[in-house]
Length: 170
Image (cartoon, rainbow, N blue to C red; front, side, top):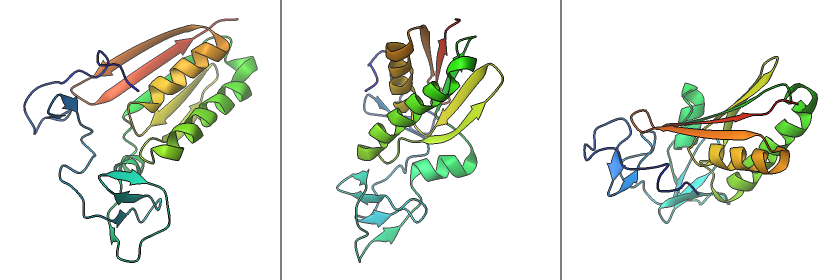
């Protein structure tokens, strides 16, 4: 869960890119109105019912709407970017990526919109792009707990984007 400090409301302008709803910042990819319940995402199969997305069997009377996570993935427009860097990354790449995937599986089990778009592996870094702003924090904290290192978070309210940077040298 994000701290209140990390996700402060941006403005009262409901049309702004990182719009607020009450005192909460809202994902601009999230449907601004309530969807018909039940609704199924035709791409991932998540079901919107009772005001939130869940996993389960497809109801017979469900409408269809692409969920915000699939929409972000299709557009290649992440809400979160985790960068793992430093000389520690090269010899520990497999363990780092396994830890990232484990965090995604745990988060996605109860929150279908929170998932990884892709993982880009460079020579001395790993970049993880996510569909939400909570999963990057979870990934960063788990990597720091497991492998130590330095962790920084930067939230851009105007573009609804969180950057989590972890660094460790051997």
